[in-house]
Figure 1 (cartoon, helix red, strand yellow):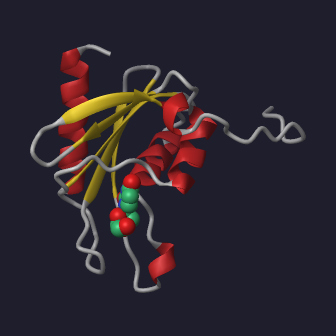
Figure 2 (figure 1 turned 60 degrees about the horizontal axis):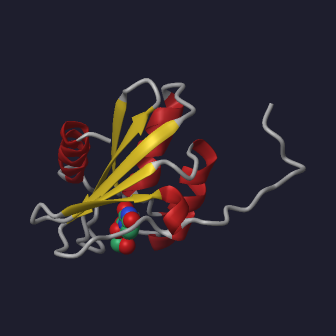
Length: 136
Ligand code: THU
């Protein structure tokens, strides 16, 4: 991934964070996903008074891409207002695994502009393989 694209994805994740609906946690998260045709989709976290119904920024962005007909994700950027990196939760890793492979870039960034890239296989080395549920 070149630096320009990495910075663009981080900028888009930051843009998405601006619309975070997080009145319960006050924890704003933004995500941007890159699909194999070069399109970028944004998502923010959206919470609910029934707390467990909150959706993470990463899944929101991925579902927007899926809705647009995209089926292959090559990078996911995530950012928050923290000084330290936040990484996708377990549920989001499982959803990323549906549309990504081990070589997908996960771009972590902080409010202060620090960033690093990890390969998806590093944070989700053994995605469950459901042999009976083959994709058609
Ligand atoms: N959250 C995300 O959107 N992505 C993450 O990677 C971690 C957590 C959201 C869920 C909830 O709205 C808030 O952050 C606090 O957990």
